[in-house]
Length: 308
Image (cartoon, rainbow, N blue to C red; front, side):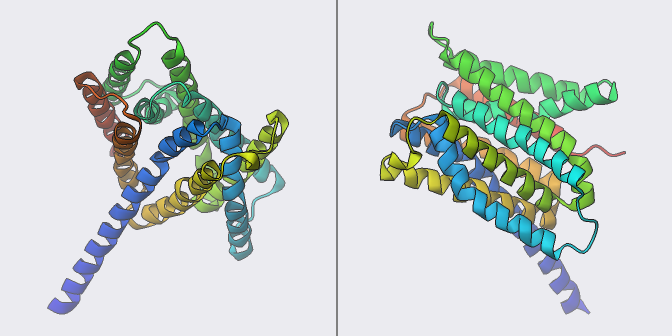
């Protein structure tokens, strides 16, 4: 009996540990995207060229997985209206959000970009409050104040000259964060009916197609004419910063739940900060560190589920 009890306890600990590791890896692989983007920009690629190459790699993977999930699905199958709804959210949450984000990255540091994107939980609170015509809880108001104070500190630290670049980049990335928050808020209906994997894979597939079409329309040359090193960076982005972390994140959710995965996801703020300092000599200061800490505390506060 004691052996069985110890086995069950150890199995639970191993499951929790695996989930924690997967959540940590997923968050940091996702967030390292911004560093690879800046690397590709340094090779002369435009935002849409980088996005097209990234999504060109990710699309076949997401499309095949969508097909396999639908083929094996035994429950309710999505109707045409459901597919249209999921496609629309994909256009907002991945296509529009990615376009805004990748254009914003041109103007600001990797650390500020990741910090501003991590304001999406605060936007979730605001969207929910508007949709339900309710006022945020006192703890949520406190977390919102922390988040925006922290972001303001980092922005002020970066916006030290007459250039308007930090403002333009910040507004674009904030727009991306808001689009992603709207996508998450509106996705609940489809996730509850069809599961998060099907929703994520299908909506991402649609956004990949939209980005490839957009890229083809505005391109003055083929993205494959880019340097081989830039193409390799974008291919790595599509695989290691898009497809794999998406799958790893859903596995982590299955093991430890979405709340813990959300909290562990805050570790993704640190990776671009460290890599930006090491690879691009991005500045670090007391104000910047204080701002990052405030946003981290805010995200954790907003991610923890309240009882009732």
